[in-house]
Length: 128
View (cartoon, one colour):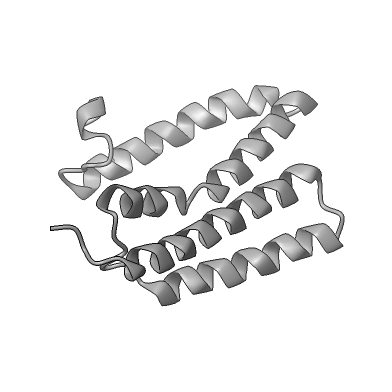
């Protein structure tokens, strides 16, 4: 189950737990000795907020590929957006490091792009 073709397609819960254990041990073995290196800590922090900022990207891509937002919860995206706006505003007001509010703005931008897709695809008749 650790083959790349089956990466997120777990056949059973035990395989998932084995992956999590392997990932945790590997990440710990890398992070612990480098935890006193400022460049590593900053890079790790940036990657964490950057990947979190991209959480809406798969939904955007799916909508783009299907040229439809059918089956997508608009209320869910509205909640994402309100949370992302609040979080980004908090980062800006509290003078958080630049990577936090830049990634927050990216996240809000993706959310607004998804809302743009809702408007765009609802204005056109579905493709035949």
